Length: 181
Image (cartoon, rainbow, N blue to C red; front, side, top):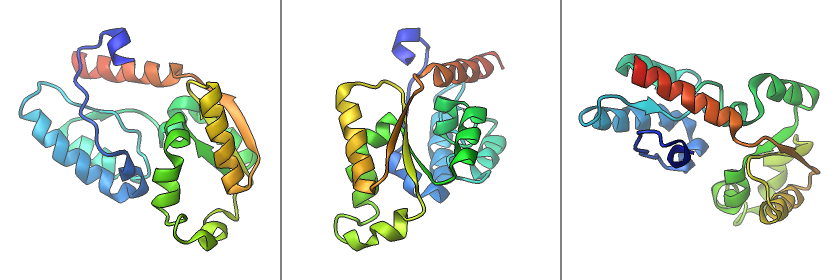
């Protein structure tokens, strides 16, 4: 997206496994942002709140940064209102993104210890009723992997093609506000 739109940005990613410990996100964003602010005129945060319960906003306020909108990336793919309606209609929804579909074994199974302690499956997933894949760039391989995730969780799979348009629009707004202001 950045290359295609020729945005004048450098990307400095943080480890995706921070999402498994969202209480660490704000501190890691602060550490990296402080480092980058010494070399860049502007820094933007490519995270939604991501489970920090406002801690990321506090860091952004403290350092004068702006971040992507929303509670989590799911809002950026499905849209806040659509996602809220989807979760209200069926609260036991386990959400997947393309990233989670690709990395499920590593980011969920291994990180939760299910590879070593499969008996924990019901402790983690008994209240879920379905898997919804918010498919940004669906293809046959990802569809197969998403189906395998759903089967592993013993849940039906619903595929919702979302594309990346909402994320791209949010990124454009974020970059525009950082560059202009």
